[in-house]
Image (tube, rainbow, N blue to C red):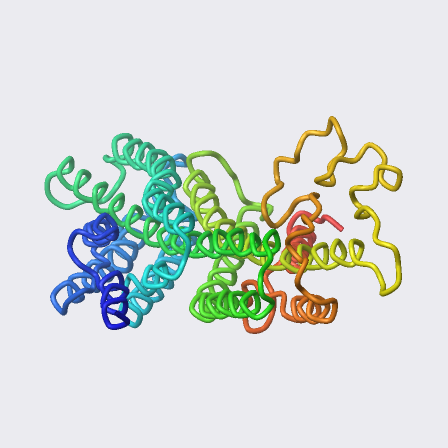
Length: 427
């Protein structure tokens, strides 16, 4: 019987053409980042070199148009091209390493879904199918704006731009190549960010499912084993993505500070024609960075909420217990004289439940049957373990929680004020 179960579980982890990753593989193939074989790998690297490096270089050095009029010059083009190419190169290398080393199923933790509940599997499958739509949701509006700018730039300034051969044909080819390069670089960056969000959401679903053990009479050993399994996957995610997060933060920060420095000079003349593309680049990079940081802080917050839930579980059990020789009485949180106008679930009568309430973050008390057979010392030991091992996404040992974001924001704000003080005299 056991070999049959093992074969069934193995069958769920092996990729095949019609599995749940079919749309993902098709998307990667169309994006030319699929490296499932040597030919696709060569094509993937060729497309990256062309659209990620060569087209931006040719566009900047041949189409800078320093002799154009004020509306067609591109003084900030080097910042745009360097920023997009650097983050796309980072994303492409990391995505290539992830898929080549772990495989798509293992990278997305689909091989571990056979050990999860039916609820987690269904919800994760829904989010998996939505992830590509989320990439399109972020990329398409920016691409429409970029297309409008490029079409206007080529259509209105063709006579001032040095081309060889037929002007309209050269304009069309150059415009299409630039748009394809922009779309390629932006999509690769957003794809890696959204995949990180998807993996973090899986851990959020697992933590919500894990929180249910505090509402049933569970064994402390099984609770500990399940939490250790979740912590292990969080460490794996942190280890895989830590370089991407750190370098992404460095590159986006450098790009924004450079943009701020060159646009706040005394001789800078800003308008939508000159700085519009730079603003669009900044929006793109900051949106991707926000996806990364928000996903990391969300899963870290949820992982740390387990400590609060376990402490509440321990307190409720202690309040309902009584010392030897003491007369049993009604549980403390059911005693309306102790907690007037409070329902059995710990909520005030007439209050609406908070929008953020879930299995981990709520103000409900734990039912008595959830701890009736667990001793005080076991509960205390489990709570102490949760306090010392809160988990979450870490970057080289630093937890990406809200306090870390506040620190990053403070450092970034200090640099911004320093640059503004050097350029426009803010002190």
